[in-house]
Length: 445
Image 1: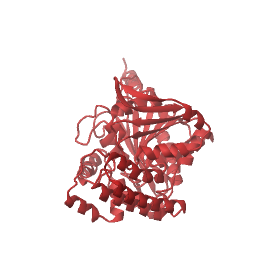
Image 2: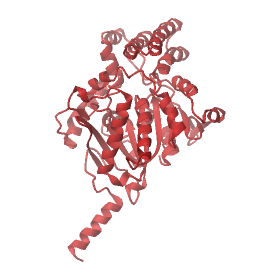
Image 3: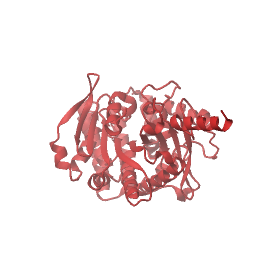
Image 4: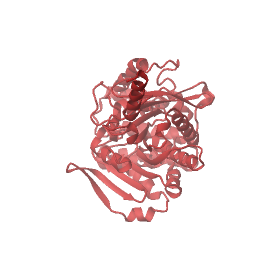
């Protein structure tokens, strides 16, 4: 057999099972990563994990996008190592990683988050629409690099502030497909513990905490009064003031609850006076940044993640941009302060009214910052053609291996999932329920 024939056979085998562009990155499995210039001066980073499922070709499985919250939190960091990637923060293998069942791409979005970066202040995004258009441009660039994924079913998953970004991204992507500006087999978008209607989330804090016994009537009154001030700014479209008042309301919650964890009300926290004084000493901007971008008031885990991303990950992926991971995250958040409290409920309604995209919301019952009651309220207020059918549809239990993991309500292209024993990070808190949700949208999980 000639050397040329042997080479051809080897190449065909590689195409049939593995990924031609795959590289050895950080951790197990085939990976690819890089930057897409979404605009002049704006560079978006992605990290792709090819599925490790036992398939003839990785294109037999769907492609799932994961978008983090913040705005400014890193998908390649938090979503990857804290929630659903192949490795956990301590370097051990994650049994429930999504990569076992599908291809997963983590996108550091908006530009300035994680490894993504901008060349100067004018290139940050300031509106949700700009974020969505950047993501569509990213997908155009990604498909040029990986044309084999154009026909692979695409599903967008997100968390927290992603609940604002993902719907508008989904809508703009769908319209771009219809205009034949991009080829993509786009199927669904699922919003995890979403900040889709910020004021509904804020207004849910006081009754939720009172009903759980975390605050008393006096605490309820103080939190509710601060939330109503936030609502007043929203009603008058004073958006930056609304964001600042939201932060003030957050401070009231921390003070009255003696330091409850915003991401899971059952997480043990330090309730001693030293810890509470430390919270009081934080500036308003620092408190916002810590909660939304760093995802934790306690800095310990964030420091471990930062060390990992700045050290072994940066070295393994050979990131040489000169911009360190997370260096622009604070500015990314600050530039969007005037957009932070604006709702995106109407975007979800437009998706359901004007597209064929499957849409879903999943919410952990122990989450506070995007508490489930807030999500239920904005869904009840949302208008779409199938609303009456959804209201009339039955609510069923999510049973996995004879364990009740939550509840589901589905009608037409819209689904709501209530997840038991989970806070803000549903994929990590309740992998069984998350697997059920993944199967609902992707047929795998």
